[in-house]
Length: 638
Image (cartoon, rainbow, N blue to C red):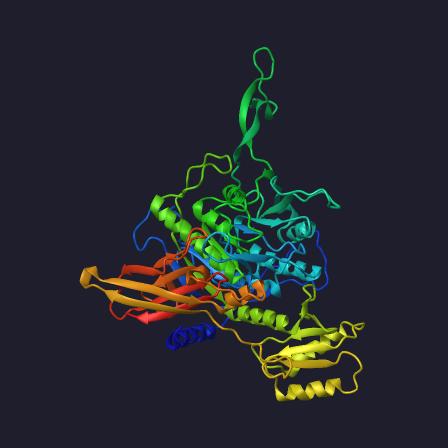
């Protein structure tokens, strides 16, 4: 990235942040019964921050295409009429949506939040190339979740986390809308009570059981194997919500009594023939109930994205078809690999997605781009057969473009989380995921890492002391890790430690500490890229060629995997996930004119591209994303 590009992005960020954040109100929950936990508090008001557009994609290339008739008249004027994908903490994103015209506009909310299952998900990343290429551990399933979303929680924190988000989601829901919350046995009983409180018991619609019959089972466990999830459905106002009953095939042909309305009894009764015998008919289909048998995503399925908690498309197709109509707005603020958004796009719904994980945003963007390109070719959605046993005709898409936004400069927070993880690895910190304050332990001491966006201050130290006061039986010392510290902080530590037998503070400044310093160093992705014009007039072409890409982060992880043997990558394309090109980059929003996204893991990017030449003097930008999700943008004037 050139200095000019960095300066341009910095100026834009500063301009966006000058806009004053708004406070949005959130109504109280009035339902009963009410679950109680330590630290429970209502969310009456929340701060809404501005969003920065970072990428746009339009599959139509400006050409008119047949689209589903969607009502865009109530769409916020400042936002493009298309899909919206947000990168950031979903609390910030939901507040932003409330402050920018989406209150009461969402017809269906589907969320698949962390289950608090005790699992620590790691995404397996495979380099591109021939079968057998080495696999390495990518970032945690949820990169930012190292602090918030790692699915390893203190129970009270988890309940407050979900309570706040459900209160905000209720505000976004249309008066005739519904919410479907996906969970499992670990916290389902708690979440059901919170949903009763937030939405009201009278608005409960269904508890759907998703039975996955293809899950491997083992006989050595001390409990019966878990082979189902739960999906709780609540309406904003029961009776007015959308509910499209679906017909599904029966496993065996059945005989069913014919039912007719009796005007005298004023109810439906079995129809009888002239002899008084009940009339039966052969039934090959039935109305879908609340137990859905749908297999888990097969490991080699084309829809597999590498996320361990990815849900199958047929499951989301049922939810979207039953609880929404074409043209409705569907929201998923835990979108992960983007299954709900992909299905919504296929079925002619408008959609809004959000995730805290940058890798999830990249995976979703690639998935939706590929789908939209296919829709421009086919004209309508192309699905593989009738996946859920209904004969619904294919829907035209509501949009063939989407924009990606970042809320509250979330990239900066992600960088902090990455730095925290590096610091913990270097210092030998054992992470304690269930502790909401301390990052872990090292050598018998508690470890607190101060945010790296400011030097250590007395306020940070006061926070440590106040936390220790809440733990009167805690006698361990505390290692405080920071980047720089104010002069008055040194004096504070000296005064605090004087004549103190327990809970002494030991400060480690990561850049200067003689024993443990000097580790905050990140070698970024680098590339050699050329862009030039060839030909004249109408025959002029833009030729972009990527000659080399080096990912020090991938090399470092490969060397760790291979021990004493040094890793070698003979083809730079093995480390590249995808390449995107913007032929007229304005320094702010990346408009995707070309996307080279190999369909299979063993396929490689091309590396050389010919496009129609832009106007002379245009800035061409090339975005390279490696297999760990690190991005690099290089620019050139042509």
